[in-house]
Length: 110
Image (cartoon, rainbow, N blue to C red; front, side, top):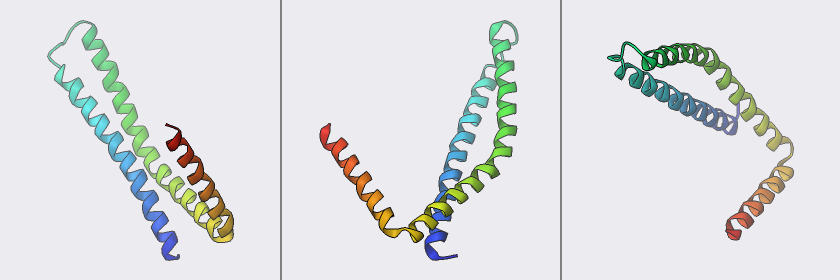
């Protein structure tokens, strides 16, 4: 694996790890909020809290199952982009220049 591929892999892993970290923090905050309302044992708040806890538990299970899949997909995308740039360097430069031009026009238009 070349140094460029290694960098692309590391960036993809960092991005997916950052996304997972943010989602886990969101879930932890929601769980703390739900637990803070534990003293309301009756009424509609209790029902909502129970449903929210069930949803959080399901989300945690889904997150752990999808975490590896997301990381693997990010690696595949990074590999594909890296391979494209190596096979078609001038096309990649043209695409990057075009995107830069469009972004510049949008920024200048504001």
